[in-house]
Image (cartoon, rainbow, N blue to C red; front, side, top):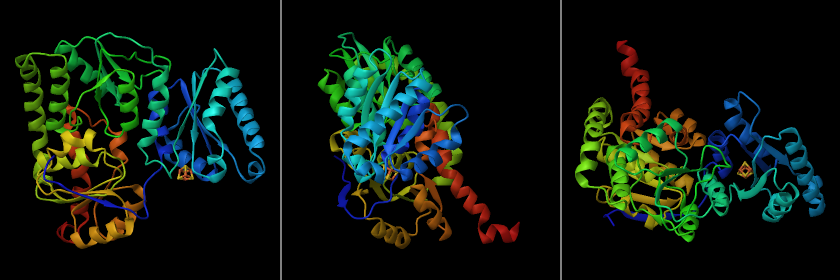
Length: 418
Ligand code: SF4
């Protein structure tokens, strides 16, 4: 492990809940539907976070359970069965239905696993019904994807075939590009999880080597391992350095000759480093504070520090899976301060004291900080942007250079001379 300082903090948190991941999961698997079992608050969150992106029939909804249902759990189960039945009658194209739990007390009391079993046997042959929790008490927003993928793992067919499995949602063009690179290296059988259709689940077994594309899939990685897969240890594919080591981890796993790996990656690296240059000029020497939210904070900190020259003040992370993060921690500069968990008030005090040039944080904290003259970047943008891979390094850097550039344009000094 590197010489990072690891500390824990508990207290009030300011993060999105796991329901938010429905926003990208429903786009990834258009034959699936996400039915949030929750309150009006949950419905508002999911509508405002995702509603603006829907141009066709939505692939998510909320079964709102409120006081009336508190009177008896039997009522709640009946209500849920009724909503599911109506939904499936109206939308016969749905192939996988996720019942997504939330944190209101009336929902916590419902055994959604049993409800999913009961409904699956009722709709056998038409739709598979699964459940996971997106509750804000248990999850931060990216953990919703972890829960959804973990729920799908038991449905994956078994196979001993040698294959590479990329795990974690990637933008489709990025995924295609990465697969092309692995094909060039001679890895022929490559699958992705989640797949582009919920019914086209990849197989899994002792011949499968798993390369995690996202750092928030702790539970999914564990159950894939239980099915016999090998989890390849690597940093995550953000920036040139992380992406190179990530691809090399797969190449090592498949015993591919180093010369071939080098000659395949070299032109990509040269091009990416050239494209990064203007952003390095803008970011180098700037002070960065990352508040915990997306679980991408450590790979981002590594990229922004090692490749863009930013100075890390503090790296917050919702939870730290040391084993999974080990390759990332080793790449961080000495004495990087990492805080696991959150006490939002104390963290905001430290933000103000340290006077950073840029804060990466949730949307709820961004506006107040901007009002105090501190530039911010929404961490949620990282899960919607195609940022993975060597080719995307400059696009990733640009996401952080943009708010600094905007703030520079709006500074009183710039405005005076304009
Ligand atoms: S799951 Fe909990 S935190 Fe998330 S929207 Fe519903 S009530 Fe709010």
